[in-house]
Image 1 (cartoon, rainbow, N blue to C red):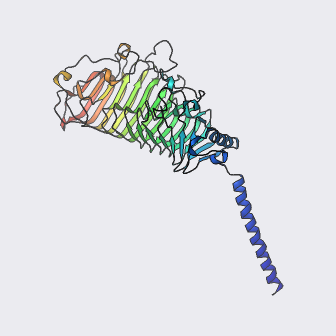
Image 2 (cartoon, rainbow, N blue to C red):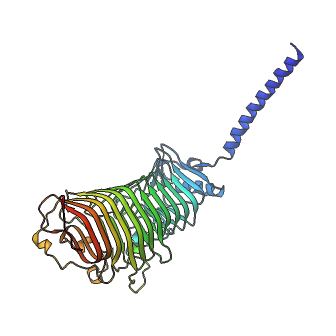
Image 3 (tube, one colour):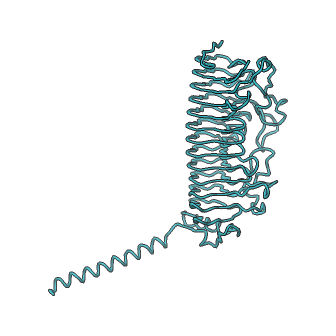
Length: 472
């Protein structure tokens, strides 16, 4: 063999060995500097029985101390834990087929996770997953976070599933959140929130809200479904200097024993710039959109469009009144401020399977009106059943402090309305256009009533296909 060919072969062998060594070193380097922190490596038994709280927390702590990364609840495992504390730059991933299961013992949920901001509800102060002053963290994966919050375990003190406070840049994606003992989540004074592709089932205990955003900004919720024992999504403002604003909710499905979306009630701060679109609401006991300002803040600039509702007694229930909801409420009653600038458009609501207490009900108070409302392109189907006595009612309760008696402004305090479709009271600048009301049975009530409404126009309002003449 010629010397030149031999040198070439030797060079190829050396290069091949170098490449092999380089690949091995590369794999070793990737493994050595991996940002994955599997809870099994931190001592978790993951047998669905042993409490692995320490292992999960150790993995989270190690992750954030190393600059961030992925804390893994591995597929096919059930990890039982008490309260865990999320930290900055951590992604808690619950893999497909994995479950992060809450401990059934209330002793495993300490009292250092802040508090619920509603009065008379201190029993919901504990929580399962807590974060404070953290940034850029996420909870994701196609697995399940199960609060294990059944009444047989939690009858008195009932931990929420999640509470995040003063946090920034949070992602909650793709996970299933089930069986909280109280609310599924409370987000307090957080900024830059993305919730996408989640499923919430909260029927195992009482007061099972879904997502409660209190004083939060830049919030996006999309592509999610809710099955709750209480309000699915709440927008709140418990602090005067922490507004709830710049919120977008889209492509969601709401089912609940109470309200689809509640905006307000806890309302010491301001609300502004809210968009809700492309959502469906079904089998709701109380209201689809429940919008209530009563603690002295300002509420304005909101639009709701492309909504479909089935068996939702009040598609829109709006009140402007005075009441204390916050746990830190001052001694004096709040003043009225403002509630204005709302658009409701492209809505179909089918309540033909419900009773006569089905209506769009929007009411301010004498001298304190809701302003600038547009109701446009709406189809509303109701069963009817209103009597002559119902039609002649004029003594409807106002939501005064004497009527409220310390409780919330609920529809039941007013009762059956003298209108079969729409009842508007104490409002200014109201425009109703292209509203189609279909009443299946007999009903003696007027289709729409405007009571103490100034500067209004109702055009193209139809009852069973026939144009209704309205005196504006």
